[in-house]
Length: 224
Length: 296
Image 1 (cartoon, rainbow over the protein chains, first blue to last red):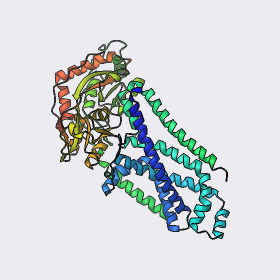
Image 2: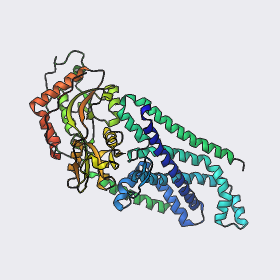
Image 3: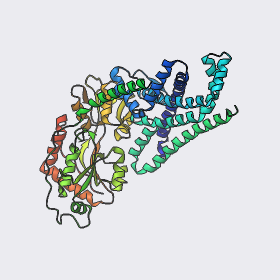
Image 4: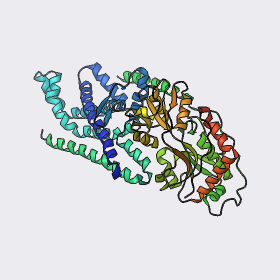
């Protein structure tokens, strides 16, 4: 195991990169979705609701399979993605994993944020409307700042689940941590348990970091 | 609102059904060789040996692959697997006086990752799953043979300019996650990408995402035959894989027995016949039988 630390770190490098870009994208998409869901425009509201119920209720593996094997048939593919940074290659496998994971996680982020919005008493929004703020103002100035505080724990849970969901990409052409682990267990089958433990610890450390960030945000924003 | 969700659900349902219909052709009906069970087992095996136990019990668990056409393959509607691995397994089973075609044989799928755990826990008695003989594996399981020597090659589109392993340096080449082939191609300077099965790799080569895929030439030949005119096998073999039979490390006596059955099959032509029947249709020439490695 110690002789192959470079593979270990490279694997977790892909996992971490994938997590970071997906976190940003799914947060952005999740905020957009929640604005549509709680907003006053009926069409957008139902669009967001349908999106969340369809995508959230589909297993992640199916979404991966769709983007890898079905979408290319109708002309959607990510062959054009060719980003190379150092020894890391961000090509079609990474792009597909990014799209699949972000679209999937955005639903959970949206629902986490919505629980936060629901936690803000209706009177707050009504008061904001009463002093003449438009919907955008009501959201950005009054509701969202309070809602985000309340939704840190559920959104952090969604992101932690997503961090572990990156392992699904292992069987979809991306050499992230789980794929690296399976490469090593094949080469050194007599040391299977040690290799497994090392990778489990790697994931635990990453998840622990995300939960600590979430905890400190919770503390910082607690005073309303 | 409810109506809209229902509509969306129906659309999704139709799409899924269409997708499933496309997979309907997964079964296949060409049969392997007929191998009759022997009937000389009384006293053939030493008292207390694993072979005697298996012959007395009259049942055996065999680990095999299901996703390698011509080697170890089982379509979605097939009751039993078929391929060269399976033909060799049938010879071993028959030698234990068990009818290979009967339900006394439990065919158990083993993927690359669980071959050693299944042998160690005794869930399977023998593994014939394109199982390369390596020193590291022999630390935890027994391996006899080889009954086939193959090597890694490349599978590319028919109109590809790639002629050998030197042409894929720095390019992405597909193989199965956690397989020896993937590690070998990385060592050759290509960027390995791992899929769940060889057929998924073939799909990605066909749609142009990756220019080449790699694994043992015998498996690639099967895939090329499945996609005739679209895919071709190129280049010389750039690795040597000794495919052997895996058995539990607690039963070292099995090695001599397996080697004996293989020797007989080499000598009486049943080995060559099995090879021709399973790998011949993919265009692989029947080679000379391999030289067995000494039992440890």
